[in-house]
Amino acid sequence: MPDLMVQVDGQTVALKDCAWSMWASCGCMVAVSLAVAGDRVHATEEQAHRNHSPRKRDREREIRQGYRWELITMARYREEIGAQWECEAHRKAAS
Image (cartoon, rainbow, N blue to C red; front, side):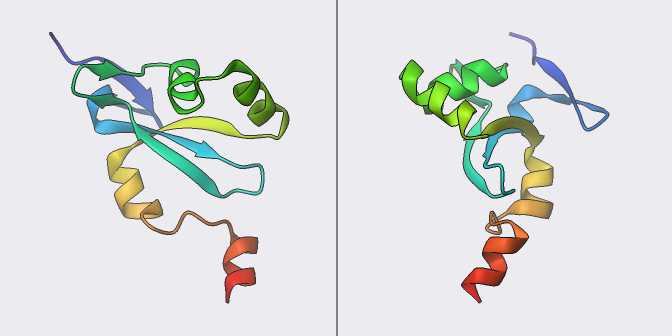
């Protein structure tokens, strides 16, 4: 099967080189999931959200609370995010 290609940050990349990241309204990343793992493929935000939160009521609550999903490249994850998931306010509160 050929690679599924997507547009992320203005560049065309293989979906297998991406992850779905879940962000809180404050700016903290709260979850991340590979877009492709084995035979599991999540090509849309809805598929990623359903994978993370299988129950509809949980997904609806998360949407009301301002959580959102974003497709990012693994390169961006490694370079910019890594283990620093917290927003500026939470980083300051922890120090």
